Length: 290
Figure 1 (cartoon, rainbow, N blue to C red):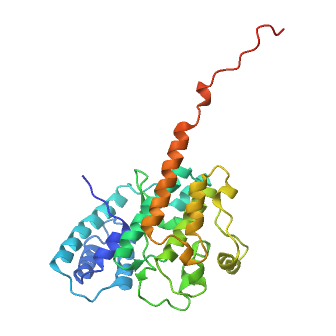
Figure 2 (figure 1 turned 30 degrees about the vertical axis):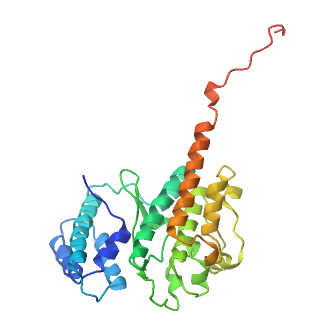
Figure 3 (figure 1 turned 60 degrees about the vertical axis):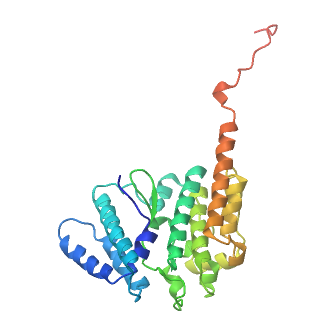
């Protein structure tokens, strides 16, 4: 059975030991010119620069690193065999305009889980957007591109938020307030909002107006944009997109629980909905003249 691992786990494990740097260069040199796609290793190099740890790795951490090397190698092999050719969430949105509610909930649950795992290693992604969520041949989502990732206790650079994506950036990042995992949660909420409604949460003619809208313009709840969206899903995304970080979910676990509850309610509603094909046809009164 082939194993897979989220990008957050890959980055976190690679950050433990200087052996990762040696392995990266060895792997890059070995496969140079042999048709391997370079982008996964480019991300790894960038990630190492962002989250490098000077602490000497323990034996347990080195074993974890070795397993991660194998899994990263398998992921790159999967790329080369076309197993990740179903594009990104961005391309899916461009094609379909909006995704089914159940699919969006599934994506949200899995990506929130990946972010929660990264957070356990004190990592923030800092650039959650549809283009950084890829799908494999089984349509399973994976979070990629930790190019802007940083440690949770690192200070934000003066213009760091401008390197993100304005349609999904958290208000506190715009205001240069302390950035936490709640900022990534906001960006994930904005990404899911786009996927489920076909519209970004805030749009405007210029990037400056977009970022100002994140700070000052009230959010239109998803089910006011697409009435078919369930109340539970709309409430969960609206809370993740609260302008005040303290009004969002207190943890990824809480966010995931809300998404899972919305998913359960949606499935129940779908099973209870009458099937038009099974409804009895109306009978014409026998006495009515033709």
